[in-house]
Image (cartoon, helix red, strand yellow):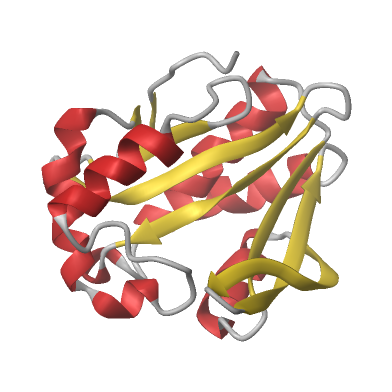
Length: 191
């Protein structure tokens, strides 16, 4: 089971997602452009958000750690992210299901959040591989992932459902434990 943790820098705090965060996440449902590349805007209504929280976000604590991203300066919820698909035998996981509110995009939020998750994955959990995936046409996300120092591995065809009868191709990136010292040094320079 993944231990519920809080991680932080001087600018960002990651906290375990709880019911108390739902009203803060609900406001992101109005930012429709955040949901362009995913199957469902689960923050769109109160009912959808509660259903997502109860059925999806908490579904298996052995393989995922859902978190909210808090801006330390304002103490506001800036978005959500998670470490998931933990594979204990292969010592791997994925970082994803990330969304960051418009007002915090192109700011310190994503860099600090990814740094905290990667540091936890490699230095606390002892993982050897962390992957990040996004829609093949989501250039902003692909650029942000590559900027972290992740290696592009290729396009995974029909990887994820995006509509009842449509699937997306995903661009997959990876950071391994061998790459982590260099990635860590780069990210620490930006913090």
